[in-house]
Image (cartoon, rainbow, N blue to C red):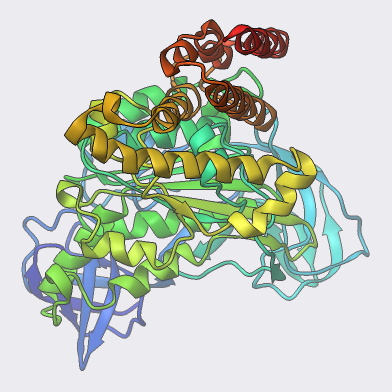
Length: 575
């Protein structure tokens, strides 16, 4: 192992001489052995980013090579864990050093002493290939952890296969002379291979009407949630984590405020999984990297989270990765870039900002695994633009890459309308790909109703500008009626409470039935208007108020049938 020396220190950036390390190799800096990574080589100098506080490090201190890249430890025991940005378990760090993390602490990402019950699924003499399952471990109640041949191994004939209780380091299979333990080590910056990337033709169900109904995310798709302070990004991500139709949730807190991350670490384990009634944490992994932690670890956290997601994807699971927030990651890149004295781009961000964001988001997707199954990683990245300015570089570069844009609106937040997704600014580029699925699995009229509702909302936006000048009474009767129907869509359908026991989640069928009922009300209303019924009488229909309560009912269908019948009777009686 080569030992170099610190030449220069500038915050989390260190230059060292006398090393033979390659790009992205892990090195240990200083007397305390601070975990660091080589990010540049210039002549005889290595440029290193340190993942820990560099206070007290001075020129002349040793820099030790490890000969390996920054890797994630993958195996049984990853689920339910809460890590820092470089996959050190926070509970173990607290136990080793108290509430304030000591420098130079190396703690394994998974417990190397705990024994797991390994059940083989291959037998001696079988031939296996890279990515093939050789056995299983029941990691959690619903998650069967597949022990696979590492993708970077050739495969071959099974010479020995064992059964019983083993630690992750003990050999469970011998493959042509290669001993395979249950643990895998994978470089976080390298995407794990798959056989084929599949088209985004299946939606990811979230249970949120504004998302599923208007701006659907495909399974294996990418989405961005930009929004200013207090617009509900964190609640939105917790809701997606709880209700999305996925098997595994990976939450990466990337440079968020310490108090917000502390609240999340208290609340997230208490969320109840609607699938099992047990803690949601049983199928979740959290990477907590607060804003006062070293900036270099922010970049590592998103790659470590993505590598973990790909690992479970390779088992055939559907994974949701939420990153909160990529703006803090970009700010860390900007700081590192300035210390490297690189040419700044727009607003001081490095010129490669877009490329780095693309590297991250492009690792998402629904794929055919090496074993022949199907798995997916869907990525939802929160963006925190300063002052809610969506024209700033991080938001704009993110929008060039992702296919779904959920624009959080501070004005909707002030009106207490949640989720505060602006339906006029948001979009989904998966719509055309997902239309056949909705026609086949929900209703042939799903897409038609969605477009009709969106046209009403667009007309409503134009009319509201006139209303602000002259008042609604000055509008023609048909336009007054359009305003009322738009209010019904906004208040009865788009608005949804994340804390109501029923309204927090809405099935596709219920979403369709509710919107269909509102559009049916519109047909009755305009037919009555054509008969000369006054607008005030139409808007005072009791069935309209009854329709507002349907979304809060669990067994809603009998009541909805009554309301629709009541609606028809009321409008027939109008003269």
